[in-house]
Length: 482
Ligand SMILES: *Cc1c(COP(=O)(O)O)cnc(C)c1O
Image (tube, rainbow, N blue to C red):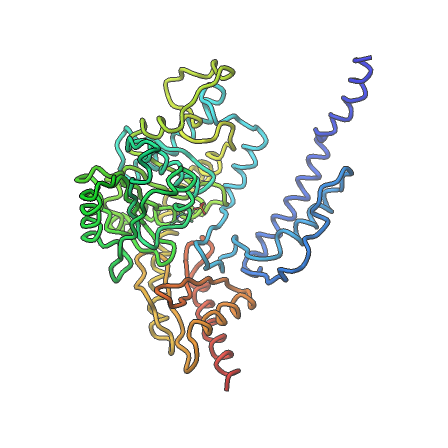
């Protein structure tokens, strides 16, 4: 009876394993699609407008019956890869651009086929060693001592959460103290940190928003005063969060000075370098990020600064014990995995089973070496400087910041009328055009457009095109008002 049922189930279950021929033909179909995508990448729009009210295609719904691969690829092409932002495009100049370097995709492919277990050292010693090597490389870049540890996360938000939890636990504060615990940041801290505080149970902690100087960097004298006042009033200052490349304008807080203040006051110093961290590979970036090595924890996103496809952030903590203390657990069914001499990723993050995401970083670093990454980052710094200089000369435009890294905020001051509304219309017109994609932000009540330059496919011609498009849209919009 049992055997009979198994005999009918087995052939059905075996359909999950395609034959070598089926693998070859499906691989060809997928490669045709991805190769076409890459061949066309310079011609593809950076943004495709779509009607937000249109209903999601029923073709995306899951049903019992299978469809063939050509059909599936067609659905992906039409309903997934077409509408909205094309982050693989060099014309992506909004938010913080990503990229998607090719060898990462191959690394992901290999990791998915072999499906190594990268959560626990016992089961995947090689995969874990590979990830440790990456973390060690990044910790060394930052200038952390050998006591440092880290974890490859899905992105910067989770990486920041891991650091905040480590900071909370290292402070020795108990839940009953959290309403007296004080966190110091600036207005330009990324909103994922607010999320992290709340998830970490620190939603009721006191938040001090320290003023910024004219270059949008934390005013360290104000920080010092604020800590002193809070301490005098019986509060428990415990954490200061600095930006190393703010999302809004790419500003870097005075890391060196904050580190000193943190040390004197026994605060945990966390740096969010999700965007700016990898500029440390360049001489200019290294100079600007001086002091980063004195922090207690830092976050940097390879899916931003190393141009990887989405899905890779990193948290680094100066003292491994802190990260471990906050994340290590054991379970009876895991007893065989315990006792390894080196930490498993599962001891250092909320995840147990995880994507073997190290390979998508390791493979491109090994195949390219570091030099092209460094050059690409330096190119981005210079492109931002070029954009800044050009914008300064464009009639009617006003630039908010000389770029510290690779973000320039600027706006057009219209001949008459509401400037904020006008800039929103420029942004909408550029998005509708689609050749490049730009985003905006509001600084002290004023709307600014941003050029965020970090996609590895963004080069001089992209920036020249973006500036031409801006001029074109402004003249159309000004003209249409006459
Ligand atoms: C992008 C970004 C984050 C969030 O990282 P995700 O990878 O998007 O989760 C946090 N901080 C800064 C400064 C960022 O630019």
